[in-house]
Length: 395
Image (cartoon, rainbow, N blue to C red; front, side, top):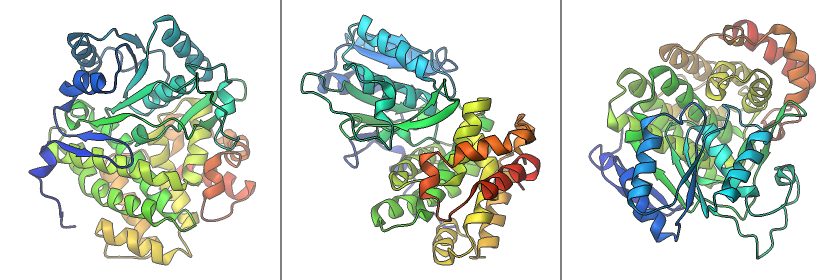
């Protein structure tokens, strides 16, 4: 596929205002102190996941904030699949440290943890009252949400422009989406340099997550051309640059293309997602699997179920991905080849998901909010079959 973008411009600073203020460009983490001061932030709590706490981007961020005269704290007790108990601990850290903002830096789990802490920091509302399908919780004028700044260090989750967060309910062993329309990031900072240190396997897993977001969002039923446009352009960027980013980790154009493509795909799924995510959420909640990797393995199985009958949409996706065979079978075959190219395992069994979980996961997956927007209705038996296939031989 020919690439229409000016690669020189992809290496220069860009400021966008849609859908939230976005500062894009290599090296822009250096501006974070000035950016925070401009927002009136004086004492941010930096939130990251436990695996990222010791990485250079966290210490670099803390140093920049300290040099800008900020009173900072660090909360890193966030699991790969954040738990409600961890959010409660993060809220306590926010309050005890006298913080006035949250800076979430890292991958999807850091984003989710930071956003959930922001939702609960200044009120006594139960975390689960923010659940996606519940009426929006009433926030009093004396309980404004803290400023939220998001800094993704993976090109995958696309979580940096919204308040939605996936949190594990430890009592139920299930993931739920929480959010509030009154919380929006005050700034999303997209610095491709922060993704360069990501190992090839994590580049692949998180990139496949972004690709899944774009595909699932685009095939959600309904009329939402704004999200559809984001999904298609995000898919074009991701499919073009993902193999390059895995193969050439230091390629800054590829890293930039992936970071922007991931962001666009994240915006697109405001329209909804589908059965890939519904299954993956519940597998992750029970077995603590890496979310993007789980999505990547499941993706072709669900596409073989969902795509027949969606030929016009398949043709559009194939077009932006540069696929000559614009049928459901041809599109899925291309996806499988791409997953092979970036070394995605061929089954959930390869990441220790047991076969006998399928009936239980199927029941839970149908309760996930993403199942409601799947383009093809699926019953428990259908979902169980998809899960069993993904466990034994997804492709």
